[in-house]
Length: 126
Image (cartoon, rainbow, N blue to C red; front, side, top):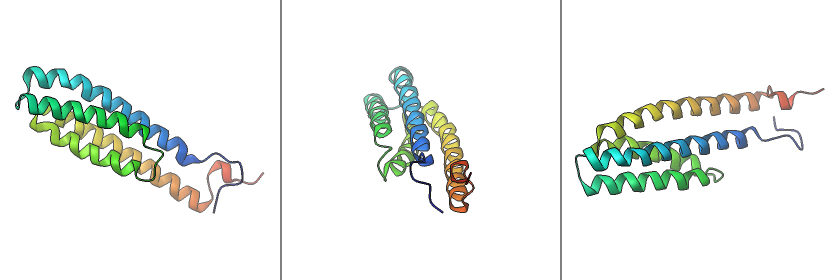
């Protein structure tokens, strides 16, 4: 079943949540850059990696309206966990955000299922 004409797109709201989550992650990774610079294992390489990861997450937040935006966000989660080579705290934060993203994907699946069933509140006939 589809949405009635003029009804808000529930996936648009989810994309906003995805973008907001990426912004929070970008802030966390940018702050982790201070830890990596001071206590990191790999010196400048780890600092560059962490800085590039923070910038990529901020950029990906703006790209969530694209069809491939979610895939990019999930790839960045893997990159964040891999950042444990620079400092373990980046990997731990990456694992925690993987749990957040797993929940967001679950919510997306539930919304898609309810939309297919026609049981979203916006799809109900008056």
